[in-house]
Amino acid sequence: MGTMLRRLRGTLGIAATWSLAFAGLFVGAFVLTRVFDPDSIDQGEGLARVAAIGAALGLAAGAAFATLLAVADRQKTIAELSVGRSALWGALGTATLPLFTAMNGSFVLIVCPIAAGLAAVSVAVAKRAALRARIDPLLRP
Image (cartoon, rainbow, N blue to C red; front, side, top):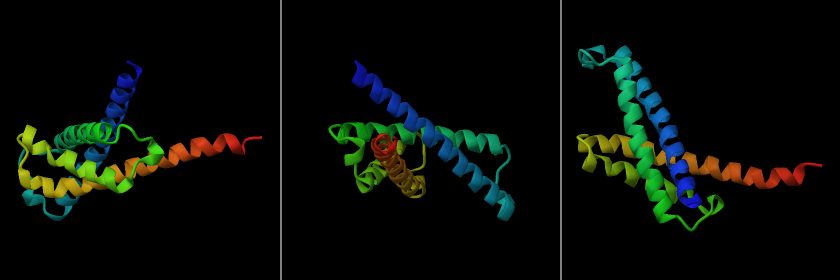
């Protein structure tokens, strides 16, 4: 039971982190569009709505990535995870979203590279934190 709860907590943590990251990226894209091409923004498309859409997409993409990572690399420790392979899981997990949502399939061409980068950064940061946690006790007097 402890392993299942730990995996669920990890999935929720990754999904929440990706939700915030995607919301920020969508807000940034919205602001740039409003500055450089305001006519392409339809009535009713406000900052809050765009942030909510980005957050929902990030939540789903993060959960898909975490699930793929947990299934495909379940026997590995954080230190053994490959950043490149994790990027692949991030892109593949995000590519599955149009299968389960009304999302336009061409949108995947934009979101998958972002998800791959976010997956690579997520694993690289986790690996660094794991390494630091192993080294810090040795450095203390």
